[in-house]
Picture 1 (tube, rainbow, N blue to C red):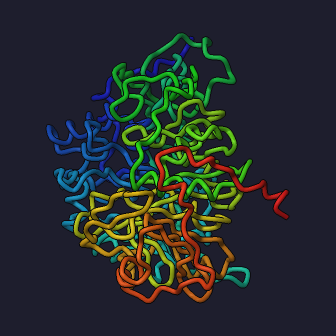
Picture 2: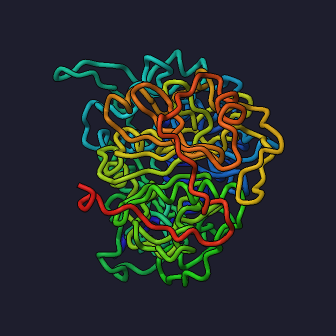
Length: 533
C-alpha cells in the first residue's frame, strides 16, 4: 500500500520548528511553493511560530507582481537570517518588498550569495563535506577582501566566507550550512511522493536541496499541482524520487511563472511557430541589441541575461538565423527562445531543460562559448556592477547567477545605455542625443564589484561593452573605445561623459550604419571557432 503523505498547507507550516534552516526551491514565481510559504507566514501571524528561521534561496523566491514568496516570511521574529542568490525586484516607483525593508533596515543578517555557489553548498551538505572551496567570486563583492556577500552591517558582523590557501592558490571557502527543511515544488506527485515536472518551465534545484535535507535527517515538503495514483508515473519522468519526499501539499492554482497560469510551450509540450514571437520595434535599444548579435559565432552555446541583450534571440529570428546558436539560461533551459519580462528565466521551444545546479557547473567551469549580459556601472578597471543600486535597492534582484557565469566565461558582451536618462533618437540613420543623461554609468569606482575587470585581464577573457554611442573593449591598458556610432561626437558624447579617461583605439571604426536603419541588417554570424583557427 502507498504511504500517505498528503497534508494541507497549514499542516505543513506546523512542521517547521523554531530556529530551523529552511531551503526553498524557486526562481521568482517559477517553481515557487507559494501556498506553503503563505501558510508559514499565516501560522506565525496567528501563533508567533515558527520563530528565528534561516532561509536559503539559490534563486529568488517570489516576485513583486502577486507571488509574495519570501515576503510571507519577512516578519520580525519569524525570519532571523537569509542567504539568497537573488531577491524580488521591480520598478523604483513600487513599494519595496518587505524583505528589502528588513535588509535595508539592518533587521536581520542578509547575504547575496551567487546562485551556483548556494547550490554547491547544498551538495556539500548532502555529502557531509566541510564546505565549498571555489575561486568563483574572487575579487568581487563575494570575496571577504571586499564585502564577503554581506548586504548589511549585521551580515558583515557574521561572515559566511573566508579566503584560504590551498594547493598553492588562494580560494574562497564557504563552510557548509545544513538545512533541516526543504520546500520544493513540482507538477505532479504520486501517492508515494514521486515528483514529475511536466508543466514546469524549469526544474531548478530540488534534488540537491532535498538530498541536503534527507541526508541530514530533516523533512522535505513538496507542493504540487495535482496528485496521481502510485505507479502511474513513468520512471524516466520522475525527477525527485519519493524516497526523498516526506509530505505533499496539493495547490491546484499554482502559477507556472509570473503572470502565467500555464503555457504549454514554456514546459516544452508544444512548440510555438517562430512567427508567434514578437520582434523588437526599431529604436535605440534595438540598435544596441543588433550590435550585440554581430558578436555571435555560428554554432556557439551562448548564455543570455536580463536586459537589452535578452532581445538578441529575436534579432536572430527576424534575420532568419534562429538556431545558429544555442541559448543556455541559468534556470535550466537549453535552446529554444528565452522569454522576456515577467517570463524571464523560461524559454519556449527549448531542446532540453536541465537542473540548475548542473547548468551552473557548466557555467562555473567555462564550458560555454559566450555570455550576453547587462551593466549598471563600469569603472576605470573595467569592473562591472549589476547587483547593487544603493538609492533604490529593490530595483536590482542582486547577483543571481551573474558571478558564476562571468567567473570563467571565454567571452562576455555587456550591453546598456552609456548614461542613464538620456534623450536619444535615431535621425537619418545616425544617433541623435537630444538630452544628455543625468546619471553617468562609466564611473571612477563602481558601487559594487559584480565582475572584476583586473581578474578578467589576468585570465585572458575577451570583454566587450556595447552602448548606443560606442563600443568599448577591455584591454590590458584600460577601457578602450573601438567603435563610434554615426552621429556621435567622440569628445562631447563619449570621452566627456565618462568619469575616468577612456583610451581610444588607433583604428577607431564607425559602427555598422546598417544598425541604424529600420530594415533588416543582413546579419552574418562570425565563423565557428574551429574555422577561425
